[in-house]
Image (cartoon, rainbow over all chains, first blue to last red):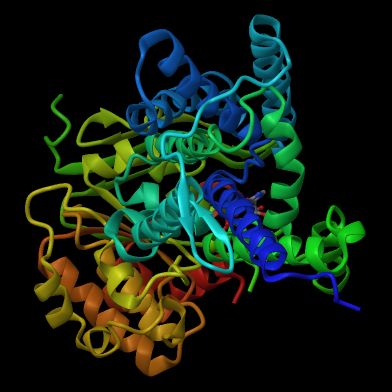
Length: 292
Length: 238
Ligand SMILES: Nc1ncnc2c1ncn2[C@@H]1O[C@H](COP(=O)(O)OP(=O)(O)O)[C@@H](O)[C@H]1O
Ligand SMILES: [Mg+2]
């Protein structure tokens, strides 16, 4: 039944799956970090990812800053934006039901996307690849830029994981995920830690946006379409679990790619189907932030 | 009058505290002098833990006055209160399950001159040294209690709030914890200890403050308590 499947098709889709998985992993990781400490479901993550791509586009087209500069500047700009957002709209409602933070980050998404759409329209803006060309591996053609994305996001995920699991800073974060009041009673400025953690997670979304700019079109809605999938990834990986988010991101990206090869009709549904199965067989786990 | 004219380190005055709409403390008054070991005793739900949590700023909805070294604590955030020199060991111990024993122990930063070094801590609590790389919650209840006390000695705070360290532990372990607490007093720490175990309280304390329904109803020195054990037992409902 798999007669029509050439190595080119298989590896081509595997690569696309890996690329998508890289974005799923990075975005889900940022969401998990934010949720773990703040119990905030950051609905604005997709809009912040889009902002990263837009800032890169603006840097190039207005200030002439090339991709390699934007790769460092744009995430910092987006993180600073996140820092201000936390101070202005999340901190004031930190003691209310978590539903409010979900609603307010959703509202922020609508405002951010609306403003960008107003100013730049809803059609995509092109951003040319900083690494044109590629290499023919025999069984497939590997574009340099896609190779770069796969490697860079893997290093980012690994680095973030190391930071959280194997440094003192990460120990503060892990401890505060469990009992922020006890960490604060040690004399640690937990409110500031919350602000910086949110900014860090948002900065990761911005970084993903810059990485995405040369692959996908830079458009106001590029984040919201992706976010639906990312939330499914986070639910499957266990809310708040960093490793769960990373592994699930890659696995689902690749599964999605393989589904395109073997059962194209199901490709758009496979992730949601898995989420459904997970929700049925692991009730409660994805809500308490301590998935196993 | 300067705050330390009579050696007062902590002065709690007409302290009221709320959990959402429900009031847990109804005007608590007591003092702790520098170097003293004072217990808060009283039956379950009397407001002992809430008193500690209010001092530490964990319970934020509170009124009245809490002065430490003459400075008002109400209005400060928990981390600012810690930086004044107050450490808290919660009733549920608060060992972090995602952290190893060593990570748990070394989490508190050095805030104030004179905190114990990691070597000193390992020496003072030898059984923690042997378990340093275990997960925090793989320890026995007694070891977890030791760890919870040990780690708050790291940041240099000299006023300790200990919430029922003897709770749920075997008598031998309780005795060991009692020894540790006496040693801390000998090292110059001032301690406010919540207890329901009267024998344990008598074995370590200078003075006792009895709390009932969110108010202080009695205060006795350790000698006075010895002469009035039956009366105090009725406070505890035992
Ligand atoms: N987190 C909380 N939320 C609401 N009420 C609480 C909470 N913690 C304690 N209380 C209530 O406050 C009162 C005092 O409790 P607590 O200070 O824990 O007592 P104790 O430590 O003396 O046993 C009790 O009536 C208790 O039910
Ligand atoms: Mg209690």
